[in-house]
Image (tube, rainbow, N blue to C red; front, side):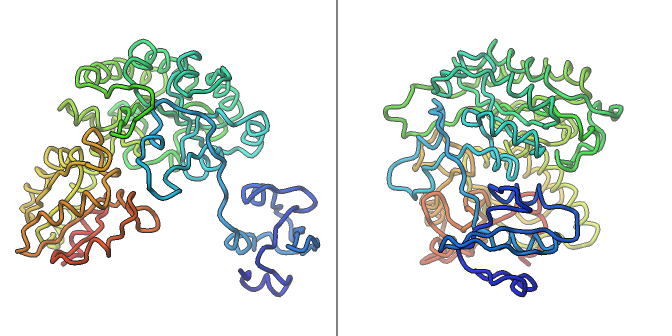
Length: 459
């Protein structure tokens, strides 16, 4: 793959060229290249050819993006743990090879927010994270009790995750943590210990609280945009608690129970008792429950500002309240501009997402007298009915729901963007074009935060 000019004028780049050194320093990957690129007028790259020959080329450091844009994708390191709840192990046979790959790579945690257990990190990885300030990191803690965590991760080596997190925190690394709640394993007192251990490692906000008792400017800020923390300080910034997901394909795996309504209610109460403690000590609440807890039990969601910086929205902690407020704001704007949505929609989604729609979103839509949104929750026959989140709906189940719709009138049918990967494929390998064949309805991949604008643009 040729490099763009002006780099080709400096060196005859060839497919398979491998950069080994920058100014004489060995480089392992793209992160090293960026970290060690000097601010001087020139830098020297050492390049190894397929033939084994080595050449050097001088270039302007400002052209580094032109080099890295032609890099092959990073190959991630795989996970050696055998977590009792790992969803990868719960996939049925016959899926794409990529579905069965478990990543455990601190670089991907830093670059993309992937959660890692730290079980494969090693001393070299820790030192590199500290040296290059790979912050923030996202860590699957699950339990700070060493024996419980060792059993949950299915590893032989007993590791003290608190000690590792403390080491990273003291070196200025910001850390976001997660617990997958497994009944009988890491709930109750074990969860309480985990929370207080994270509280001990957390970093206070630098400024005063806002009038709602949270981090100022918290709504719609993210950890990367947040300016209320000293960037030189590390520490645990958030803890998300999500319920274990159990598919129907657990033959030969450790027996686990789903989070019951009783446990979900008890966990909500636990978290509600801990958040004021964190708020007093840190200036923010630290621990956040994923939306499933509130939707499962019928409990009221916290207010949007009570999610502080929405640091755990990718764990679905506060996603529903955030979307509700975003849509409300967009509808108010559209109403003032006289540009409200014009078409009725049919949304095909999971049962849990359908519950969120009917409970949180539909009342807002109805208050603005927009066209009807028909929301249909579908069974997940691929993974089993215990799997109720939208992102794990497969093309086959969505197509089944689509074909069950009446042929007339022709509908605008919307799917969640979470059911398609970056290549436009569902978990079972279907594309939107394939699902559109031999049926009359117009299919769309919706948006989340920008849903109202998406709807308006349909005409």
